Structures are given as structure tokens and as C-alpha cells.
Length: 306
Image (cartoon, rainbow, N blue to C red):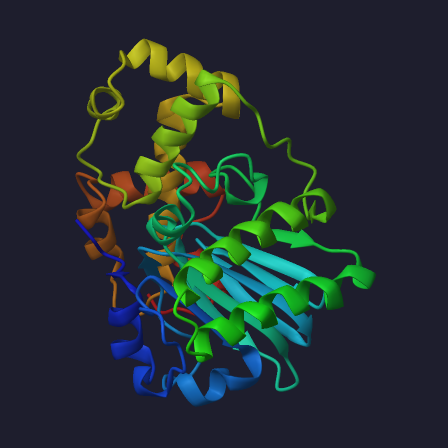
């Protein structure tokens, strides 16, 4: 099941952009950096873009202006001195961008970092890339020029002819993440960054949910994929997230519903059928119990149709 398209960089640009305008001399399916000043030249699709899932990680570093972007069904406004992180396989879309925006959009695969730095898990220990982390983080204004210069340095490798440009890009990106880590502040009061085996297992479970919700998968199926018993998986998830596996599964089922309700081509009955509900009544009761409103009311409020 894949209601929301799963795209790599090449597929994304074929659908929404003009890849021939890329100045990247490294495989842009593995790494891409675009200045927001150049986005109108590369992006050929009007905003807002449709919802997609990407096989790559990406982040926005804004130095001027503002952007609105979804992560899941939640809408965020990114302002100057802020970074916005979207781990691979999360549901996202760009909604709007101010005309005066400046900054960087960076898209990469973890395999790219692993191959060129030799690090087995290059994103480990970085709280902003964790599954439970909030997407929006703030940087002290006085450090924005410093870290902007780091990304400009990477840009010179992309557009130059240095024989080791891929390795230099990977190492500079790895260093960038390590250097910003002490200075970033999450725009939330949630606790993040738990360590230990329980956290690893709980985040693996959450990653499986993020890769594409399957209404036919049970807790036992997920436990089998994680090579543990359902009871042990549930215990670890509850310890890390304060919720049971079933509660998290319901959250992701609800996320899929909310995202599909924002897409006009999906009728309520189609959404109910695709997400494993026996009938429209069961679907309606689930949505109202979780949100306090009907699916039709949510769709009207968000500007969709019935």
C-alpha cells in the first residue's frame, strides 16, 4: 500500500522540477544542495506541492524570509535562523515560500555519508534526526552567518572539479551536523534524545511506521520485523514514548487519514477502504474519537471537499 508517493530525488525532480538546471556534479540522487534564491529556477510545479514521501533525508536552513511546510498533517512556518528537518520516509510537502527568502535546502542519503566518511551510523547522537524529534529548531542569530558559510563551502565542492568533491562534501556535511548540535534549540518542550537499547528498538518501530502505514500489519508483525516479542516491543515503546504500540499505530493511521483528507481526489469512502476500516461508520467513529470532530468537518475546515 502506498497512497502517498514514495520518491527518490530523481523521481521528485522528474515530477516537480527541472533536473537539467541542477549545477550539482555529484549524483543528485545521493546529495543535493540548492540555494533558496535558485529554487524558482529549479521548481517547475506551482505551490503547494502534493504530499510525498522521500527516500532521502532533507533539511532547510533559512537565513531570510519564511517558508511554510508540512511534516505529516501538521503545518509549520520556518523563519530566519531556523532549521527544519525531515528524516527519510516522512510525509511532507512545501506549501508556500516568501519572495525574499534566502538560505539552503539540503537533501541527502545516509548511505552517501556512510560511503564517503566511513562512519557506520553518521546520524547517531544527533537529536534533530531522531524519529521522535520535533522538526523545527532554532539557531542563535549571531551563528547563522558562521554556519551559512559552512554550507557555502559545500556548494563550492558541488560546482567545482575537485577530484575528491564527494568525500569532501560528505565530511563537511557530517562536520556541519556535529558543529550545530550544541547550539540548536528545539521549538518544543518535548523530551528527546533518550539513549539505550529501549530507545533503539522503539525508534526502529517508529521508523517502520513512518516508511508507509500498512493497515494490515499487527503488533505481532512489527515485533517479528524487530526480532523481539510483542510484549518486549510494547514495553520499550511505552518506556521511550509513553504510549503503547497500538496507540502509536493509531496515531499513524490517523496521520494517513488527515493527509488524505487534504487531497481532494480522495473520497471519505475511499480513504476508509484504503486504511482498513470495515465500513464508513467504523471510519467515522474512529476519526471522531481521536479528534473530536467528524472527517467531513475536518475536511471543510482545511479547505477540502466532501
